[in-house]
Length: 320
Image (tube, rainbow, N blue to C red; front, side, top):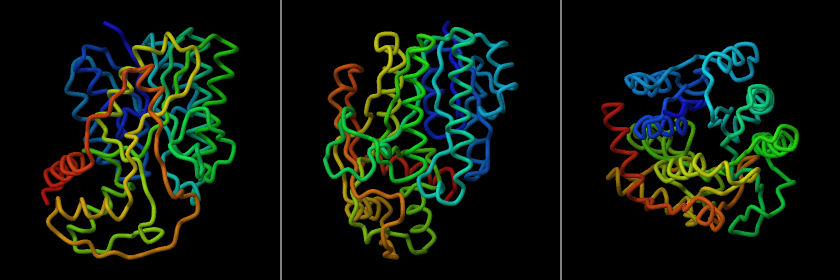
């Protein structure tokens, strides 16, 4: 039985990834600091579900805490790393930039250093579609220039890709970075649009619609993302050092997204039309040619079905 470290295991993507790995027979060492960026009760509820599995072992740990992290590496002796822990959110990086340097730079450095020290060669890690900035050329391809990020969050994710490349050269680490595109689904993050819109519409409150809805996002359902992560873990040995897009390749305008949600909820949204926020981009769209070729990646979920699955989970979890 293979043992894997999944960092950020109580987070949205980390939780779903850890659960799939456990279902497939892996021994999972989960790690999360359970911080208060959003309601930690949601993180604890996810973690509680994982802890029911006999092959899951959890550590509360900040990846920026090198001594504590090294103790886990020394004790657990896992053979592969799925690095999903990070300070997320584009807009929050305007309010608390230091959190991004702490987790996304110092924390990722610790993971790479310890992987080199303990000779763990294979690392799959989370990057982001944010690295593409406000590029007008879509779909975004992995070979496009990503030298002009428009948020600190994006800058830290691009830095992660550069750091992985350095540690591949220094220590022979095989690193596969996954550029996620607007991931959504059950157990999602409260700071993301689908969660906020659902909560506000059900409460009869206005929803904040930035740039008057004249934006488009490549919404990607969580199960499709996890399919890509699992395939990446199987193929990382073959890539040396690379980055791959994981998206849906079907951007949807925010106005259309809201209409889908209104139909699923059976309620009309009260919209507060706002200007474009600093750090936001107008459109994202993933070219998934490389993901198909390398990982056999083929997203299955249509947006309406994914939104319906989220709403069903939300109503069940919050009894609304």
